[in-house]
Length: 354
Image 1 (cartoon, rainbow, N blue to C red):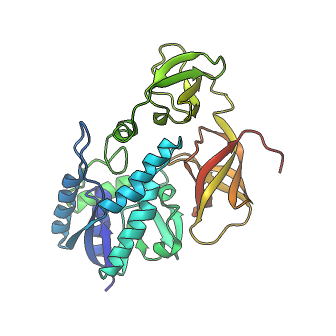
Image 2: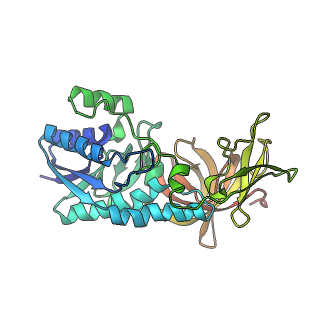
């Protein structure tokens, strides 16, 4: 019998994952990954409640249950990475780094060492012969967050929810009487729940007042508590008064200045060429040509032409895309297959014809 260790977060998705695998004849062990336990001002970390919920479901299912403590590694590989990226003026995605470094590396290795044959999670994605494919529920598809996982790791991973929609998952959990069937999905930063990124960063970086400047007139419109807290395309939180809304079109970390405009057609907001570094291909390196790309989770797939330059990937977008910021991940698809992707380092407005 195949032994599967299921990452159980205390939510409905991972709970149903464990239940389905048990029904399919696997020998299932539930594992809670203790990644973050720190309370934040005005927000109690939900880890203890999540652990209790995961335990309750494991008892319901009659499966073994373990806790893997990755807190030190998580702080170093995910949290410190995120903070450093923001300090450098970029916009990282900690969920992607968590999957790369923790769930499909630390968790996988620890599970195999403990006697598991495979691992499973509640991600909405599909795996076929080490190939990562989009979930049936394209609205919930999570391949964007999984693009840095290796093909080798995927060969030892099960995603039972990839064939179902979220409403189906809720209904199946309810039919089975799972304790977490009605539990709401977690929101906000992956490891601290509902706390916003600004509130979280404020604990680790010193507030540094600076000016908000109109890009066109060079006029000072207001002040901010630190350029680190703003990202390209941001509209809310500027507090610049009435009239047309302002959008962030750039920032200078050295001068601690944030640049804004009311012009939605400003060239700083719309890009037709994106350069990627830290490239990761799940399996084989794709040939140059046209592919579909996703510039952020739940953004629609758009067409782009891929070419290789100086070890990086350059993407020429068929149509300009709004607010693509340095540090973001761009994920590349061939049909429903997720090939991999990279991290935005340079954005060009005008390029010669290819």
